Each structure stands twice: as C-alpha cells, then as structure tokens.
Length: 210
Image 1 (cartoon, one colour):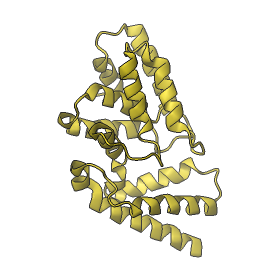
Image 2: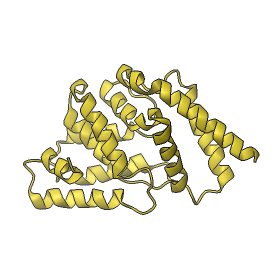
Image 3: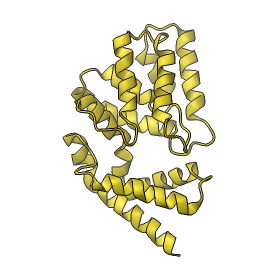
C-alpha cells in the first residue's frame, strides 16, 4: 500500500482537505534534501514491522501515529529532533481529533525513541523503540547502506569527529545488556545487530589508522 493510501485509511472519518494537508506537510519533511536515511523509506520499513507486531500492541493506532511522526523533524546535528517531532505532532493533534490523553501518549511514544532517553517500562514504547532500531539487525548489505546513508547525512561533519562520535554511539549500544528490549525483536535482530555494529566499529577504526 502506498503511504498516502495508508494515511487515508488510518483516518477514514477525516475531511479530505485536512487529511491531505497533514500528509503534505509530512511528505515535504520526509523528502528534505539533507535526508539520506531518515526518509519515507525508513518510515515504510517501520510500518511493515509494526504490522508484523500489531497483535502485540494494545493501542495500535497511537503507536502507528508515533511511527509516522517520530522523525518528522530531522536535522543531523540537533539533539532535539524527537522533541521537535513531538511538537509538530501536537500542532496536528486537534486536526487529527486526538483527545488530550491520547495526544499526550503519542508525544510520549515519540520521545521514547530519543537517543539517550531512559528505557520506558511499558511494552508499547519498547516495541516502538525496537522497531526504530530494527535496521541494526538487518542483512550486512542493508546495514552497509544504512551506515553509508548516515555518513551522508553528517557530511558537514569532519571525518575524524564523525568517526569518534559514531564509534561512541555504537559502543554504547554494545554495552547494553541487550540492544532490543522485547523478546520478539531480540529473536529477530539481536545477533545480527551485534555483528553489524562490531563490524562497523572495526571498519571505522581501520579508517582512522590509514
């Protein structure tokens, strides 16, 4: 299903003009020229995995909305992308017909994907984070494309600074007891993710020595 069609089916009772306006803003953002990984392709991958996990989620509509919005604001150098994405969602919440309680929950879910945020205790947020990180446990070829796309997004950063920050980030992931918080995601991705991350750290370290 095309993303535009999925957005329509997600909001069947919404006026077409409002529904189209909200999707158009998301579409403009996810097509920004500085993006290489954080694009619609990432959202599509997340939604495919979400569909696979849907039966495990108590309120799938709220989790799906969080996936649509979680990278809507993205600037590579900013530490506040998830905060700003949450704010963008809140600016759309009334048009989406969200109650204050549900709006707060979607914003909380978006913020749970923020790097460095403490792990949430509820299953839905944990699944959302695992879905967002699923690329780490993809095939070696797909992981290579992901790593290259991330480097392109940070092309303004000098190579040594990028390597240092990237190795630190990857090292923190490996230091976790487990990268994936849910059993379902760990079974699918944990082993490959650890292998991919170690291989990237080794490659980045070798590049520094050249």
